[in-house]
Length: 228
Image (cartoon, one colour):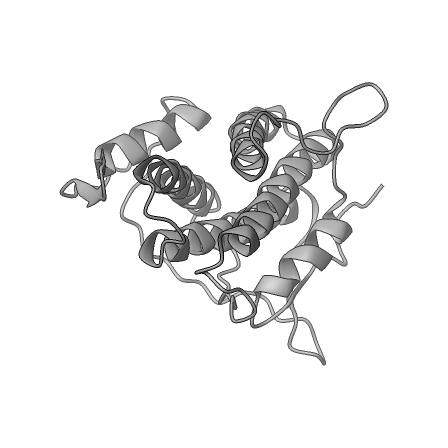
């Protein structure tokens, strides 16, 4: 079994969270057998022919790869919010910081689970004014809802039960993030979009990709992913 990464605690504002806590959280999502490590494999993604768009792959691996891409975008987004905070309210920034830590743990978990062969992307947040609270929270809620809905749909489309377990746990955390951000935008509002029976709807891979591509320099495609 690979050894977990050792690192000194990281501090952000009034929130003191150690790397060990990040990894413990992420490892708990997948069970005791999956420990994050310091593996830095950066395998080149598969480039689809003609247009330079990066194809995410097929079946379970492709669906997990899409979750990896979304997690990278979320981790980078929340990292930027922490670096250039829209508020001096320590409670708000502390909450955003914890979300960043969770997104980082999700990203590292899936990267390790894919054995370093996931598609690595470069984010583009040039259209976002990180000093504007309303704009930041609007985009934060959009990303949280996309990641939640994508996990919900992936849990239906995945073949392997062990993959479903991991994705369902990640989706639960993402849903709590979405609720917290919704409450930050409108006090007392903890609910995002729901379907006719009050459940959070799934988002098909093609729709998740269409949204997440807004935040990427080089776009991704899911032409070989299940979409029904």
